[in-house]
Picture 1 (cartoon, one colour):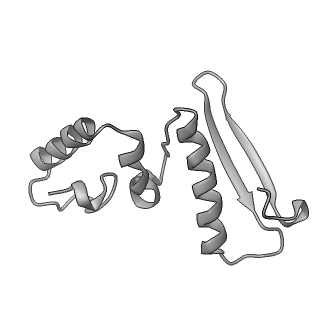
Picture 2 (picture 1 turned 90 degrees about the vertical axis):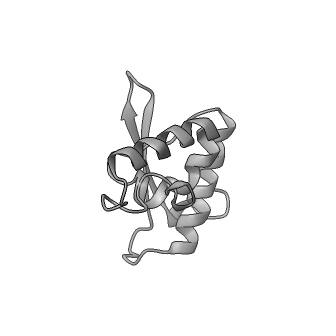
Length: 108
């Protein structure tokens, strides 16, 4: 994160050796309010790096709420189409978690 002073951030990375997953927590010590602009810059940098290495994104609790905009970059259109079809099959009225997991542009 070259645009920050090293003392401005605390970075903690941990993961699951067996499946190659990494969790990243980045905090700004002493600042308790979310800095949305900083979060977006860091998120973009992390996802660009992951995609450049042909990686993927997932989340145990937040993919559909905060990361679904990246699905189109990591999943083939045909895969998103199947996901959208399955969603429509099991939730034809869009009542279960609307706009979550699948990007809104792919939901019917």
